[in-house]
Length: 250
Image (cartoon, rainbow, N blue to C red; front, side, top):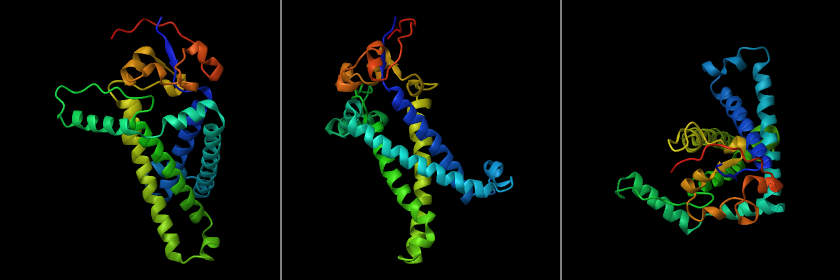
């Protein structure tokens, strides 16, 4: 029986699903305003009061994402596992070294390609996480400026509102491309994990996946308190069951 290890607790998987749903709806309803004649916008634009509903849903998802961000901050600050995640997400020297070695592998400087053993959260995940924080802050501020246009213009000139609209639009494009090009490759289209990493659904990784993806200090890569736990032991911090499957071969 292959061991399975906790990667995401039920709480974290619910947060991730909430983020995925709200982000997707924000992208669809947001770009529908900019591209109302696009074929994918027709289910919204072709129905009565469709654009009115679009605006309501866009704002609703924005507020939901703001509340999710607040909850996530509380989770990071007031739970042992959350504080460990926050600590492990801080970039360090090893991340810079891993990035450099990855570039050398991709540019065929390292021949043969060097096996890079990365920590619990690799440099890609840390950059994406920091980008999520930055993007959420920018979209929240500019989104409220666009929402409360009348109130904003009582204190600031019109050109500031136009700047906020431009920033909101181009940051939305950047965030969407980041998910499609970067995140989807990392968790779906990467040949090492295709058709996808199931951790966002099941919450667990096999020992083979742990050794392959986090070979550096992998036994201390993934649970509350910094010590990796098997799935049965991890139930106390939101884990699940161990499922019997055939032993994987290296």
